[in-house]
Image 1 (cartoon, rainbow, N blue to C red):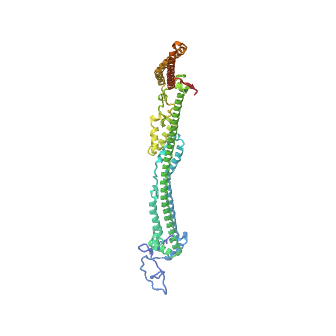
Image 2 (image 1 turned 90 degrees about the vertical axis):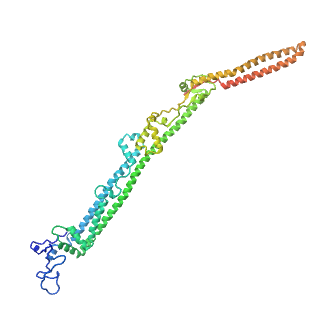
Image 3 (image 1 turned 90 degrees about the horizontal axis):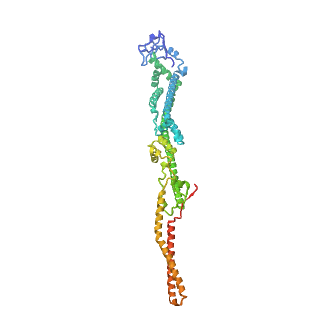
Length: 487
């Protein structure tokens, strides 16, 4: 500010009781105004005005003759203070925005880092969980919700939206004071208040500014500073709100992405095990069918013969082999999965948990993380079937007994037919001989016909019995014996 006039000790004698200077318009002349028109009048004492009396106005003006020049003049100093106030407020707004971003970006960065870590985890879950720090980061982020500031009003350190709005209002009120005479009067007291700065000086300073258009414009133009501050603050408030929404969404998206990646990896592991199990079922069935076919053909691998205690050349006939060959327990997902599958599933459960897993993955975790299931890892044997070797031999004995029992009557028929053929042939031959003897000529023809009929009957009986025995041999087929083939 331009220094107000500072009276000397002698001049202080002219100060009134309220501390305001007693003004003498012209030396030796006392009138009602600071200037007189026409001839001099008789000096009279001025009783004063509401603003008080002034003495030595010339001295005051001389002391303040550069009020409109030094440092931009009196108004320039006021405008400078306002500009400085604008800068201070702008810095506070900038600091509040910095604090807002600092307090919000920490959690955003943490979940983004955890998302990147999850991308590594799904490549080799078992190796990833060996680093507990990484595990904790993923677990913390997979269900994270944004807890940072969502508006500039949520800033916890330094200025926030509400304190800045209050300061901006005070600043705007100060700037607005410069737009009216009364406001500028108050502004002088606010900015230049000090001991010895009295109302007279305040009035005169106000008049100095009021009477100089350039000075007046400097103060009135400071309203631009108020506009800048309020625009900056409103922009900061709006940007913070948008950033808060974005941070909230980013944290939620990162958490969802982490859960999705882990669920997809678990689903992939589950699908791989199911595929392997389906292939194992096919392998198991094929192995069983091959062994059964080989048994029916009487040709089995040496390893299979050794496994079931079968001997080369052993008779087996047409026994019910399927009743002797049992598949046993087929492949299950738990018995097909290897130790690597179990470790991967355990690691994924550790990272994902049960509540964040899909329904299918929850079942996967339940099926593969209990101790009893772990014991089944890689226990499936594609040759997991049993052959009742002793049952085979028992069946062969029973078949042989049944064959003998069924063959016995037909064997008797054969014997009888053969004997009947012999006897009938003998009678036929005798009838032929009788035909040459005149004394027996009358009987030979009848005997020949009777013998011929008996011979044909016995031959039919023999043929029928032989056919039945042949059928029995085919039925029991005891010609079948086991042979070995190379593995």
